[in-house]
Length: 480
Ligand code: HEM
Image 1 (cartoon, helix red, strand yellow):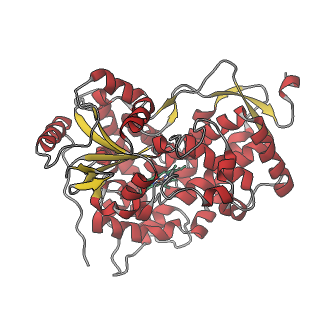
Image 2 (tube, protein in one colour):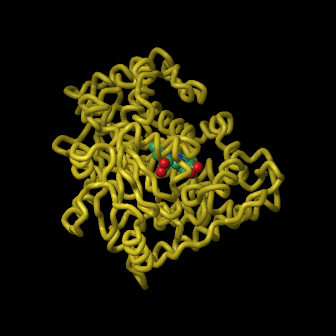
Image 3 (cartoon, protein in one colour):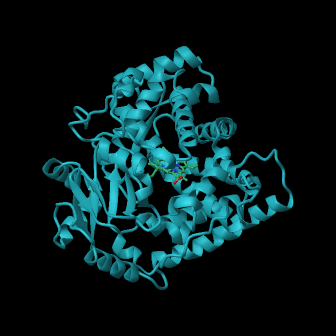
Protein backbone atom coordinates (compact mmCIF):
# COMPACT_ATOMS: atom_id res chain seq x y z
CA UNK A 1 0.00 0.00 0.00
CA UNK A 2 1.45 3.38 -0.91
CA UNK A 3 1.33 6.08 1.74
CA UNK A 4 1.64 9.77 1.05
CA UNK A 5 3.81 12.30 2.84
CA UNK A 6 1.86 14.78 4.97
CA UNK A 7 0.93 18.29 3.81
CA UNK A 8 3.47 20.98 4.73
CA UNK A 9 2.59 23.17 7.74
CA UNK A 10 3.01 26.91 7.80
CA UNK A 11 6.14 28.03 9.64
CA UNK A 12 4.69 31.53 9.98
CA UNK A 13 4.32 31.90 13.73
CA UNK A 14 1.66 34.61 13.50
CA UNK A 15 -0.45 32.47 11.17
CA UNK A 16 -0.24 29.59 13.62
CA UNK A 17 -1.23 31.76 16.60
CA UNK A 18 -4.30 33.01 14.71
CA UNK A 19 -5.22 29.45 13.70
CA UNK A 20 -4.91 28.35 17.34
CA UNK A 21 -7.16 31.16 18.57
CA UNK A 22 -9.71 30.35 15.88
CA UNK A 23 -9.64 26.64 16.74
CA UNK A 24 -10.19 27.48 20.41
CA UNK A 25 -13.20 29.66 19.60
CA UNK A 26 -14.66 26.87 17.46
CA UNK A 27 -14.26 24.24 20.23
CA UNK A 28 -17.34 22.01 20.15
CA UNK A 29 -17.34 21.42 23.96
CA UNK A 30 -15.91 23.40 26.90
CA UNK A 31 -12.32 22.79 28.02
CA UNK A 32 -11.57 20.98 31.30
CA UNK A 33 -11.36 23.36 34.31
CA UNK A 34 -8.27 25.44 35.09
CA UNK A 35 -6.92 29.01 34.84
CA UNK A 36 -8.08 30.52 31.58
CA UNK A 37 -7.15 34.22 31.71
CA UNK A 38 -4.35 35.68 29.53
CA UNK A 39 -1.64 36.04 32.12
CA UNK A 40 1.89 37.02 31.21
CA UNK A 41 3.22 36.38 34.68
CA UNK A 42 1.92 32.78 34.61
CA UNK A 43 3.32 32.29 31.13
CA UNK A 44 6.80 33.44 32.21
CA UNK A 45 6.65 31.32 35.34
CA UNK A 46 5.57 28.33 33.26
CA UNK A 47 8.41 28.80 30.81
CA UNK A 48 10.93 29.10 33.64
CA UNK A 49 9.67 26.20 35.74
CA UNK A 50 6.36 24.46 34.96
CA UNK A 51 6.28 22.09 37.95
CA UNK A 52 5.16 24.68 40.55
CA UNK A 53 2.20 25.38 38.26
CA UNK A 54 1.34 21.83 37.19
CA UNK A 55 1.57 20.08 40.56
CA UNK A 56 -0.82 22.46 42.43
CA UNK A 57 -3.27 22.27 39.50
CA UNK A 58 -3.16 18.47 39.79
CA UNK A 59 -3.89 18.77 43.52
CA UNK A 60 -6.79 21.10 42.82
CA UNK A 61 -8.37 19.46 39.77
CA UNK A 62 -7.06 15.90 39.58
CA UNK A 63 -5.50 14.22 36.54
CA UNK A 64 -7.00 16.48 33.86
CA UNK A 65 -7.09 20.28 33.73
CA UNK A 66 -6.35 23.09 31.32
CA UNK A 67 -4.13 26.13 31.65
CA UNK A 68 -3.56 29.11 29.39
CA UNK A 69 0.10 29.51 28.46
CA UNK A 70 1.17 32.13 25.90
CA UNK A 71 -1.90 32.71 23.75
CA UNK A 72 -3.34 29.22 23.93
CA UNK A 73 -5.21 26.89 26.21
CA UNK A 74 -3.41 23.62 26.84
CA UNK A 75 -4.93 20.53 28.42
CA UNK A 76 -2.61 18.63 30.75
CA UNK A 77 -3.26 15.02 31.67
CA UNK A 78 -1.11 13.67 34.50
CA UNK A 79 -0.68 10.41 36.36
CA UNK A 80 -0.57 6.74 35.41
CA UNK A 81 -4.07 6.40 33.91
CA UNK A 82 -3.75 9.59 31.87
CA UNK A 83 -0.32 8.60 30.55
CA UNK A 84 -1.59 5.18 29.55
CA UNK A 85 -4.62 6.74 27.85
CA UNK A 86 -2.49 9.07 25.71
CA UNK A 87 0.44 6.83 24.88
CA UNK A 88 -1.19 3.39 24.69
CA UNK A 89 -4.94 2.82 24.84
CA UNK A 90 -6.05 5.91 22.86
CA UNK A 91 -2.81 6.87 21.11
CA UNK A 92 -4.45 7.05 17.69
CA UNK A 93 -6.76 9.85 18.91
CA UNK A 94 -3.77 12.21 19.13
CA UNK A 95 -1.48 13.73 16.54
CA UNK A 96 2.14 14.79 17.04
CA UNK A 97 2.58 16.86 13.88
CA UNK A 98 -0.21 19.38 14.44
CA UNK A 99 0.73 19.74 18.13
CA UNK A 100 3.88 21.55 19.17
CA UNK A 101 6.14 18.80 17.76
CA UNK A 102 5.27 20.56 14.49
CA UNK A 103 7.55 23.44 15.59
CA UNK A 104 10.47 21.13 14.80
CA UNK A 105 9.58 20.76 11.11
CA UNK A 106 11.71 23.72 9.91
CA UNK A 107 14.82 21.82 11.05
CA UNK A 108 13.79 18.17 11.03
CA UNK A 109 11.32 17.99 8.16
CA UNK A 110 9.05 14.93 8.20
CA UNK A 111 10.89 12.60 10.60
CA UNK A 112 9.38 10.25 13.18
CA UNK A 113 8.67 13.05 15.66
CA UNK A 114 6.58 15.08 13.22
CA UNK A 115 4.50 12.53 11.33
CA UNK A 116 1.48 10.38 12.19
CA UNK A 117 -0.75 7.56 11.02
CA UNK A 118 0.13 5.25 8.14
CA UNK A 119 3.07 7.40 7.02
CA UNK A 120 4.60 7.14 10.48
CA UNK A 121 3.94 3.41 10.74
CA UNK A 122 5.67 2.76 7.43
CA UNK A 123 8.72 4.84 8.37
CA UNK A 124 9.00 3.21 11.78
CA UNK A 125 8.67 -0.28 10.24
CA UNK A 126 11.49 0.48 7.79
CA UNK A 127 13.70 1.97 10.50
CA UNK A 128 13.22 -0.55 13.29
CA UNK A 129 15.85 -3.07 12.13
CA UNK A 130 18.51 -0.37 12.54
CA UNK A 131 17.65 -0.33 16.25
CA UNK A 132 17.68 -4.05 16.92
CA UNK A 133 19.74 -5.21 19.85
CA UNK A 134 22.67 -6.53 17.83
CA UNK A 135 22.84 -3.37 15.70
CA UNK A 136 22.99 -1.21 18.80
CA UNK A 137 25.57 -3.48 20.38
CA UNK A 138 27.74 -2.80 17.32
CA UNK A 139 27.87 0.90 18.30
CA UNK A 140 29.30 -0.02 21.70
CA UNK A 141 32.93 -0.03 20.47
CA UNK A 142 32.51 3.54 19.26
CA UNK A 143 31.00 4.53 22.60
CA UNK A 144 33.90 2.99 24.55
CA UNK A 145 36.55 4.45 22.27
CA UNK A 146 35.13 7.96 22.38
CA UNK A 147 34.58 7.89 26.15
CA UNK A 148 38.14 6.70 26.85
CA UNK A 149 39.44 9.44 24.63
CA UNK A 150 37.30 12.09 26.30
CA UNK A 151 38.55 10.97 29.72
CA UNK A 152 42.21 10.91 28.70
CA UNK A 153 42.61 14.63 29.22
CA UNK A 154 41.11 14.71 32.70
CA UNK A 155 43.45 15.65 35.51
CA UNK A 156 42.77 15.29 39.24
CA UNK A 157 41.90 18.64 40.80
CA UNK A 158 40.57 20.30 37.66
CA UNK A 159 37.06 21.77 37.63
CA UNK A 160 34.94 21.17 34.57
CA UNK A 161 31.42 21.68 33.29
CA UNK A 162 30.20 18.11 33.14
CA UNK A 163 27.23 18.97 30.92
CA UNK A 164 29.47 20.61 28.33
CA UNK A 165 31.87 17.66 28.45
CA UNK A 166 29.08 15.11 28.00
CA UNK A 167 27.52 17.09 25.19
CA UNK A 168 30.70 17.11 23.17
CA UNK A 169 31.19 13.41 23.77
CA UNK A 170 27.65 12.33 22.81
CA UNK A 171 27.79 14.44 19.66
CA UNK A 172 31.02 12.71 18.60
CA UNK A 173 29.42 9.32 19.26
CA UNK A 174 26.30 10.31 17.30
CA UNK A 175 28.34 11.64 14.35
CA UNK A 176 30.14 8.31 14.08
CA UNK A 177 27.36 5.86 14.97
CA UNK A 178 24.50 7.61 13.20
CA UNK A 179 26.18 9.30 10.24
CA UNK A 180 29.42 7.39 9.86
CA UNK A 181 31.23 10.75 9.97
CA UNK A 182 34.66 11.20 11.46
CA UNK A 183 34.30 14.11 13.90
CA UNK A 184 37.99 14.91 13.51
CA UNK A 185 37.78 15.30 9.75
CA UNK A 186 37.87 18.99 8.97
CA UNK A 187 35.23 20.17 6.53
CA UNK A 188 32.82 17.29 7.02
CA UNK A 189 32.50 15.57 10.40
CA UNK A 190 33.67 18.52 12.49
CA UNK A 191 31.64 20.97 10.42
CA UNK A 192 28.50 18.84 10.68
CA UNK A 193 28.79 18.88 14.48
CA UNK A 194 29.21 22.66 14.53
CA UNK A 195 26.29 23.29 12.18
CA UNK A 196 24.07 20.93 14.10
CA UNK A 197 24.74 22.72 17.39
CA UNK A 198 24.07 26.05 15.67
CA UNK A 199 20.76 24.84 14.28
CA UNK A 200 19.75 23.31 17.60
CA UNK A 201 20.41 26.55 19.48
CA UNK A 202 17.25 27.95 17.87
CA UNK A 203 15.07 25.58 19.90
CA UNK A 204 16.70 26.67 23.15
CA UNK A 205 15.69 30.32 22.66
CA UNK A 206 12.58 31.90 24.20
CA UNK A 207 9.29 31.60 22.35
CA UNK A 208 9.09 35.39 21.83
CA UNK A 209 12.50 35.39 20.12
CA UNK A 210 11.77 32.25 18.15
CA UNK A 211 8.82 33.83 16.33
CA UNK A 212 11.00 36.69 15.02
CA UNK A 213 11.99 36.56 11.34
CA UNK A 214 14.54 38.48 9.31
CA UNK A 215 18.32 38.96 9.13
CA UNK A 216 20.35 38.21 12.26
CA UNK A 217 17.45 36.50 14.03
CA UNK A 218 17.90 33.01 15.53
CA UNK A 219 15.47 31.80 12.83
CA UNK A 220 17.81 32.99 10.06
CA UNK A 221 20.85 31.48 11.79
CA UNK A 222 19.02 28.17 12.03
CA UNK A 223 18.15 28.28 8.31
CA UNK A 224 21.78 28.94 7.36
CA UNK A 225 23.05 26.12 9.57
CA UNK A 226 20.37 23.78 8.27
CA UNK A 227 21.43 24.40 4.67
CA UNK A 228 25.09 23.72 5.49
CA UNK A 229 24.15 20.57 7.36
CA UNK A 230 21.91 19.41 4.51
CA UNK A 231 24.78 19.69 2.05
CA UNK A 232 26.87 17.37 4.23
CA UNK A 233 24.09 14.86 4.90
CA UNK A 234 22.89 14.66 1.28
CA UNK A 235 26.49 14.11 0.14
CA UNK A 236 26.75 11.20 2.58
CA UNK A 237 23.47 9.74 1.34
CA UNK A 238 24.61 10.06 -2.26
CA UNK A 239 27.89 8.32 -1.43
CA UNK A 240 26.04 5.40 0.07
CA UNK A 241 23.68 5.11 -2.92
CA UNK A 242 26.64 5.14 -5.30
CA UNK A 243 28.77 2.75 -3.33
CA UNK A 244 26.59 0.50 -1.15
CA UNK A 245 28.53 -1.43 1.47
CA UNK A 246 26.48 -3.76 3.70
CA UNK A 247 29.37 -3.83 6.18
CA UNK A 248 29.06 -0.13 7.01
CA UNK A 249 27.58 -0.12 10.50
CA UNK A 250 26.24 3.44 10.71
CA UNK A 251 22.48 4.11 10.91
CA UNK A 252 22.51 6.33 7.81
CA UNK A 253 23.78 3.40 5.70
CA UNK A 254 21.03 1.20 7.09
CA UNK A 255 18.36 3.79 6.33
CA UNK A 256 19.61 4.14 2.74
CA UNK A 257 19.53 0.37 2.22
CA UNK A 258 16.36 -0.45 4.19
CA UNK A 259 13.21 -1.64 2.42
CA UNK A 260 9.58 -1.94 3.45
CA UNK A 261 7.57 -5.18 3.14
CA UNK A 262 6.58 -4.21 -0.44
CA UNK A 263 10.19 -3.53 -1.41
CA UNK A 264 9.81 0.28 -1.32
CA UNK A 265 12.64 2.40 0.09
CA UNK A 266 13.03 5.74 1.77
CA UNK A 267 13.73 8.62 -0.61
CA UNK A 268 16.82 10.81 -0.08
CA UNK A 269 14.65 13.45 1.53
CA UNK A 270 13.07 10.88 3.86
CA UNK A 271 16.47 9.50 4.86
CA UNK A 272 17.69 13.03 5.56
CA UNK A 273 14.65 13.93 7.66
CA UNK A 274 14.78 10.71 9.66
CA UNK A 275 18.54 10.91 10.29
CA UNK A 276 18.26 14.53 11.42
CA UNK A 277 15.39 13.57 13.71
CA UNK A 278 17.44 10.80 15.30
CA UNK A 279 20.30 13.19 15.93
CA UNK A 280 17.94 15.76 17.41
CA UNK A 281 16.00 13.31 19.60
CA UNK A 282 19.09 11.49 20.81
CA UNK A 283 21.61 14.23 21.49
CA UNK A 284 20.23 16.43 24.27
CA UNK A 285 18.46 13.54 25.95
CA UNK A 286 21.54 11.36 26.47
CA UNK A 287 23.72 14.36 27.38
CA UNK A 288 21.34 15.52 30.07
CA UNK A 289 20.83 12.08 31.56
CA UNK A 290 24.59 11.53 31.91
CA UNK A 291 24.91 14.93 33.60
CA UNK A 292 21.99 14.50 35.99
CA UNK A 293 23.14 11.01 36.91
CA UNK A 294 26.66 12.19 37.75
CA UNK A 295 25.18 15.06 39.74
CA UNK A 296 22.94 12.78 41.83
CA UNK A 297 25.72 10.22 42.38
CA UNK A 298 27.98 13.00 43.66
CA UNK A 299 25.26 13.95 46.15
CA UNK A 300 24.59 10.38 47.28
CA UNK A 301 27.84 8.73 48.42
CA UNK A 302 26.05 5.58 49.71
CA UNK A 303 24.50 4.93 46.28
CA UNK A 304 27.82 5.66 44.60
CA UNK A 305 29.61 3.22 46.93
CA UNK A 306 27.17 0.44 46.02
CA UNK A 307 27.68 1.15 42.35
CA UNK A 308 31.47 1.08 42.68
CA UNK A 309 31.37 -2.19 44.66
CA UNK A 310 29.29 -3.70 41.92
CA UNK A 311 31.74 -2.50 39.26
CA UNK A 312 34.67 -3.94 41.18
CA UNK A 313 33.12 -7.33 41.65
CA UNK A 314 31.68 -7.71 38.14
CA UNK A 315 34.18 -5.88 35.95
CA UNK A 316 37.45 -5.87 37.94
CA UNK A 317 38.73 -2.82 36.15
CA UNK A 318 38.06 -3.93 32.59
CA UNK A 319 35.65 -2.11 30.27
CA UNK A 320 32.10 -3.49 30.36
CA UNK A 321 30.87 -5.46 27.36
CA UNK A 322 27.75 -4.46 25.45
CA UNK A 323 25.99 -7.60 26.72
CA UNK A 324 26.72 -6.67 30.34
CA UNK A 325 25.30 -3.21 29.82
CA UNK A 326 22.25 -4.10 27.80
CA UNK A 327 20.25 -6.43 30.03
CA UNK A 328 20.30 -4.67 33.38
CA UNK A 329 20.88 -7.98 35.20
CA UNK A 330 24.70 -7.85 35.27
CA UNK A 331 24.91 -4.41 36.90
CA UNK A 332 21.64 -3.88 38.80
CA UNK A 333 22.92 -0.96 40.92
CA UNK A 334 23.81 0.96 37.77
CA UNK A 335 20.41 0.16 36.35
CA UNK A 336 18.51 1.36 39.42
CA UNK A 337 20.50 4.60 39.62
CA UNK A 338 19.77 5.27 35.93
CA UNK A 339 16.06 4.52 36.35
CA UNK A 340 15.85 6.88 39.32
CA UNK A 341 17.74 9.61 37.45
CA UNK A 342 15.25 9.34 34.60
CA UNK A 343 12.36 9.49 37.07
CA UNK A 344 13.54 12.78 38.55
CA UNK A 345 14.80 14.28 35.30
CA UNK A 346 13.14 12.70 32.25
CA UNK A 347 14.77 14.87 29.55
CA UNK A 348 11.82 14.65 27.12
CA UNK A 349 9.61 15.96 29.91
CA UNK A 350 6.48 16.69 27.95
CA UNK A 351 4.60 14.72 25.30
CA UNK A 352 2.79 17.35 23.21
CA UNK A 353 -0.22 16.22 21.18
CA UNK A 354 -3.31 17.57 19.40
CA UNK A 355 -6.70 15.88 19.90
CA UNK A 356 -8.01 14.52 16.61
CA UNK A 357 -11.61 14.31 17.88
CA UNK A 358 -13.53 15.29 21.02
CA UNK A 359 -12.94 12.76 23.80
CA UNK A 360 -13.70 12.18 27.44
CA UNK A 361 -11.31 11.39 30.27
CA UNK A 362 -11.81 11.45 34.03
CA UNK A 363 -15.31 12.87 33.75
CA UNK A 364 -14.30 15.80 31.52
CA UNK A 365 -14.68 16.34 27.81
CA UNK A 366 -11.81 17.65 25.73
CA UNK A 367 -12.66 19.41 22.46
CA UNK A 368 -11.38 18.24 19.08
CA UNK A 369 -8.35 20.31 18.07
CA UNK A 370 -7.20 20.95 21.68
CA UNK A 371 -3.50 20.85 22.51
CA UNK A 372 -3.14 17.98 24.98
CA UNK A 373 0.08 17.19 26.86
CA UNK A 374 1.17 14.38 29.07
CA UNK A 375 4.21 15.09 31.23
CA UNK A 376 6.54 12.42 32.54
CA UNK A 377 8.34 15.01 34.66
CA UNK A 378 5.20 16.06 36.55
CA UNK A 379 3.80 12.51 36.63
CA UNK A 380 7.05 11.20 38.12
CA UNK A 381 6.71 13.65 41.02
CA UNK A 382 3.13 13.00 42.11
CA UNK A 383 3.18 12.24 45.86
CA UNK A 384 0.19 9.88 45.61
CA UNK A 385 2.19 7.69 43.20
CA UNK A 386 5.78 8.23 44.41
CA UNK A 387 6.33 8.60 48.18
CA UNK A 388 8.76 11.44 48.89
CA UNK A 389 8.93 12.26 45.21
CA UNK A 390 11.81 14.76 45.49
CA UNK A 391 14.19 12.23 47.07
CA UNK A 392 16.73 10.30 44.97
CA UNK A 393 16.04 6.67 45.98
CA UNK A 394 17.24 4.11 43.40
CA UNK A 395 15.69 1.29 45.48
CA UNK A 396 12.33 2.33 44.03
CA UNK A 397 13.52 0.40 41.00
CA UNK A 398 14.47 -3.00 42.36
CA UNK A 399 13.00 -5.55 39.92
CA UNK A 400 10.25 -6.41 42.47
CA UNK A 401 9.32 -2.76 43.09
CA UNK A 402 9.39 -2.03 39.35
CA UNK A 403 6.98 -4.88 38.63
CA UNK A 404 4.49 -3.35 41.08
CA UNK A 405 4.41 0.11 39.48
CA UNK A 406 0.99 0.99 38.06
CA UNK A 407 0.73 0.97 34.26
CA UNK A 408 1.73 4.40 32.92
CA UNK A 409 3.37 5.55 36.18
CA UNK A 410 6.91 5.62 34.79
CA UNK A 411 7.53 6.65 31.20
CA UNK A 412 10.85 8.39 30.59
CA UNK A 413 10.87 6.87 27.09
CA UNK A 414 7.17 7.42 26.34
CA UNK A 415 4.98 4.41 25.70
CA UNK A 416 2.98 2.28 23.29
CA UNK A 417 3.77 1.91 19.62
CA UNK A 418 5.70 5.22 19.60
CA UNK A 419 8.00 4.42 22.49
CA UNK A 420 11.42 6.01 21.94
CA UNK A 421 13.05 4.18 19.02
CA UNK A 422 16.51 5.10 20.34
CA UNK A 423 15.91 3.83 23.89
CA UNK A 424 18.44 0.99 23.69
CA UNK A 425 21.01 3.21 22.02
CA UNK A 426 20.58 5.95 24.63
CA UNK A 427 20.65 3.56 27.59
CA UNK A 428 23.74 1.79 26.31
CA UNK A 429 25.51 5.07 25.73
CA UNK A 430 24.70 6.43 29.20
CA UNK A 431 25.69 3.20 30.96
CA UNK A 432 28.94 3.03 28.98
CA UNK A 433 29.95 6.62 29.68
CA UNK A 434 29.06 6.56 33.38
CA UNK A 435 30.71 3.19 33.99
CA UNK A 436 33.99 4.04 32.29
CA UNK A 437 34.12 7.39 34.03
CA UNK A 438 33.50 5.96 37.49
CA UNK A 439 36.11 3.27 36.98
CA UNK A 440 38.75 5.98 36.90
CA UNK A 441 37.40 9.13 38.48
CA UNK A 442 35.14 10.52 41.15
CA UNK A 443 33.31 13.79 40.63
CA UNK A 444 32.75 16.22 43.44
CA UNK A 445 30.25 19.07 43.36
CA UNK A 446 31.75 22.52 43.63
CA UNK A 447 30.55 23.74 47.06
CA UNK A 448 27.80 26.33 47.10
CA UNK A 449 26.44 25.47 43.64
CA UNK A 450 22.90 24.20 43.38
CA UNK A 451 21.29 22.71 40.35
CA UNK A 452 18.52 24.56 38.57
CA UNK A 453 16.86 22.95 35.61
CA UNK A 454 15.81 24.47 32.29
CA UNK A 455 13.30 22.61 30.20
CA UNK A 456 13.59 23.87 26.63
CA UNK A 457 13.86 21.99 24.38
CA UNK A 458 14.67 19.21 26.88
CA UNK A 459 15.53 19.17 30.58
CA UNK A 460 19.12 20.24 31.17
CA UNK A 461 21.09 22.11 33.84
CA UNK A 462 20.42 25.84 33.50
CA UNK A 463 23.90 26.88 34.67
CA UNK A 464 27.23 25.16 33.95
CA UNK A 465 27.36 21.95 36.00
CA UNK A 466 30.75 22.50 37.59
CA UNK A 467 32.40 19.52 39.25
CA UNK A 468 35.89 18.78 40.52
CA UNK A 469 37.70 15.75 39.16
CA UNK A 470 39.25 13.40 41.72
CA UNK A 471 41.12 10.18 41.19
CA UNK A 472 38.87 7.33 42.16
CA UNK A 473 39.48 6.04 45.66
CA UNK A 474 40.91 9.21 47.18
CA UNK A 475 38.56 10.21 50.03
CA UNK A 476 37.36 13.81 49.75
CA UNK A 477 39.00 14.91 53.02
CA UNK A 478 42.47 13.81 51.87
CA UNK A 479 42.32 15.14 48.35
CA UNK A 480 44.38 18.18 47.53
C1 HEM B 1 18.09 9.05 27.65
C2 HEM B 1 17.86 9.06 26.36
C3 HEM B 1 16.50 9.25 25.75
C4 HEM B 1 15.30 9.58 26.33
C5 HEM B 1 15.01 9.82 27.81
C6 HEM B 1 14.31 9.65 25.27
C7 HEM B 1 12.96 9.92 25.46
C8 HEM B 1 12.00 9.83 24.48
C9 HEM B 1 10.58 9.99 24.70
C10 HEM B 1 9.91 10.31 26.04
C11 HEM B 1 9.95 9.82 23.51
C12 HEM B 1 8.45 9.88 23.27
C13 HEM B 1 7.98 11.30 23.21
C14 HEM B 1 6.47 11.43 23.29
O1 HEM B 1 5.76 10.49 23.67
O2 HEM B 1 5.98 12.54 23.01
C15 HEM B 1 10.97 9.57 22.52
C16 HEM B 1 10.72 9.37 21.18
C17 HEM B 1 11.72 9.25 20.25
N1 HEM B 1 13.08 9.14 20.48
FE1 HEM B 1 13.99 9.15 22.29
N2 HEM B 1 14.94 9.39 24.08
C18 HEM B 1 16.26 9.14 24.32
C19 HEM B 1 17.23 8.82 23.40
C20 HEM B 1 17.02 8.72 22.05
C21 HEM B 1 18.03 8.39 21.08
C22 HEM B 1 19.49 8.09 21.42
C23 HEM B 1 17.44 8.45 19.86
C24 HEM B 1 18.01 8.18 18.50
C25 HEM B 1 19.13 7.57 18.25
C26 HEM B 1 16.03 8.78 20.08
C27 HEM B 1 15.09 8.91 19.07
C28 HEM B 1 13.72 9.05 19.28
C29 HEM B 1 12.74 9.11 18.21
C30 HEM B 1 13.03 9.09 16.72
C31 HEM B 1 11.49 9.21 18.82
C32 HEM B 1 10.13 9.26 18.11
C33 HEM B 1 9.62 7.83 17.96
C34 HEM B 1 8.33 7.71 17.19
O3 HEM B 1 7.53 8.63 17.17
O4 HEM B 1 8.12 6.65 16.58
N3 HEM B 1 15.81 8.93 21.41
N4 HEM B 1 12.21 9.58 23.13
